[in-house]
Image 1 (spheres, rainbow, N blue to C red):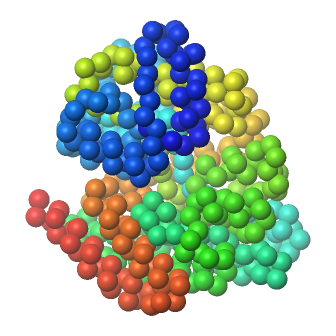
Image 2 (cartoon, rainbow, N blue to C red):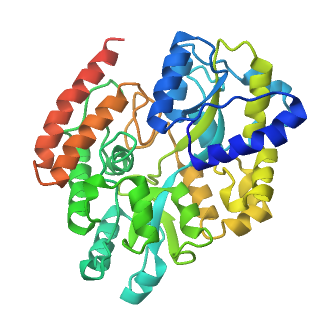
Length: 410
């Protein structure tokens, strides 16, 4: 599994609270995100059975299911009435289902994206955040909030190259500006007006009112900037709210939360989940399901709340979590905004036109990892002033055509 903090907490709690009750020993291999993706892809492709269960995201789920690497979970769900599949939020369920409609993974936590901003700074400057902001409005607010003399940028946006870094928020901007990576027939559309306007806007906003060293700034860097008072706004994952509101955070209670900015769409937040997938070749399917069911359960959320704190609960996957009094108190500042963002995310139709795959901030094919990395590198160079956005997208279009050609013929 991926070695993020909430997963490591799970590892600590398993022996005492799962193995002790069930007698099932769980042996964990924890790796950084890039490494865990490679390890899981390799092991599941070979069907070695070394891992019974692995963390996969909604990016991999449908592809792995199509390749026959995952065991469908519907029969386990039917027998395990206490699990409560109907409690899993619908956008999360959709993102973890195969083209055949079967369930292939269960979520550990889910997230969308929204805009975080300094309420105190806005009051001081006489600024007002719209209830449902557009990107045009955010650009104007960033200009007014940008105070380099006081060490504060107007906004922080990921500029670090990577399909899971810069390409993620950028793609949500592309969607709402009317663009897309590919149309439904797999024609590459990176040089169309919608994609071009979105890329120019994103690059221009970062260059003019973004953080220092933007091409070295990813999620963790923008989170640090926001916590340390170096940015007035930040557009990113809803998961960022927890650390901002944690005890000891210098900005606790000072942050406001607004929906992901829009232009041509009704909403534009992304959808992401780390989830449990069962390898098709496992020889211990019942034990594997018992662990997966526990790790994604309401029972486990309660355990985390008692043992570690309700602000650390792996939320964003169950409807009921947002109704729990303990969680509502711990997440009072951002819980409603997070729930709304996830509920409004639609991986089936994230933009103004139909798409060839399921996904919001990514194109759901394996080749997107390389393509997203390439395009974000080209646009990162545009942020640095090494080339124009037009030149970056012209080169990117050629790479996108190669990917599209592989699927046009199918």
